[in-house]
Image (cartoon, rainbow over all chains, first blue to last red):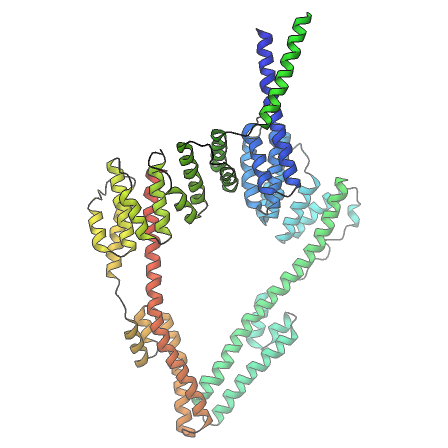
Length: 281
Length: 293
């Protein structure tokens, strides 16, 4: 009787296991073939029918991969949230959380990335963060212009990949940003000065010319006793171009700063990913 | 272990393996796929659920299963806001189905949302009303459609069935009454009158249409150009370039302002209509979800 019972159990577990493995293999091949929606459904089938943590983890990772490849990073974050709630094994949970951090970064949720990284370090204090997760934290801090904090983590990553941290100079020269308020004040009192300050001498000259033209027309009209024209055309043109020049100076400074920040962060991104790659090897 | 026992064990192992392989290759049945799609839908994986349901072949399904499939595909379309597909599928569900009631109300709502108001009303007229709550719900839906069509007498007939006491729709019923009053009190503006006002005083037509800021903004350039034209005429005469130049600009702005005032009446009217239509549709939607979802 006991033998029979055992054999039935073997039969059932064997059936389910082979079935789940078959779905998993099918899903993997669909993912490789670039059929992401079909692969996603196949991974979900595994999650629907399987209870073994390792198989479920493989399916959850696969599904996350399909979502990332479809550019649905926010959906991937939500999906991983549900999987994290259903996963009990600590090491698998840790990996899912790391995957979620990467998805948050890819979704452009930099604050969320940092918050999730802080949380994972608190929940799993004994498990070391993967180089990719460390890199993602540094890149998110860079995006938020929290460079001093990023520099500290960058040194830690470099130390982990066996580099001499005293020789690291990546964060020594932070980008010098310009003040939008200063540009506005300059353009308010000296036409074109804000544009010049923003590094656009051509636009500065153009701004001076159009404002001067309006002013000239106004003054000449006034002197020729065309008072309404002096006010309605000259002053109106001068006033409009002056106000526009002040606003334009602010826009130009913001563009200048964004360009500088982007160039600096891109250079850092390259170095950070290089370090993460070295540590992975 | 004796020889027969070993043979029996080996036979059972073979049976287990063959059974496993057979099951692994078997095409899943309707119920299994339905449950899987339900699981995906509960996880908000609507793309995946739609894919699973779309792959179920209708061949060989019983009428009840076909209805269930139609309903679920319609429901997924409704959840992903593909309302055209949702109304089409939901309204195909047959009266014998357990989903018929829900399909009719949600299908009609999808039609109303898409602007097919009369069709939605026709569906609701035939929709089943097994109890007093649903009778009241139907009256609310038909009243909402009547308001969307601005048929106030029709609305008044439907509102006689409102009890204002049902937890699921009391607030919505009160708000519908408010919309009815507000819609009737909206003054109808005439585009011709707006044009005439702007001809007398530039910008006044827009103020009359309900766009006060635009009216003031359009008055200032016309006034400035008028003054410049006057100055050109007074100082340089009617044949001067200054008078002709500013005069032409003034004419363009003046006529443009009149035309703008005529158009602004219709723009304002559609803005008000859109605001009320959205409110009415919102208040039609909540009770259906409260009672039938």
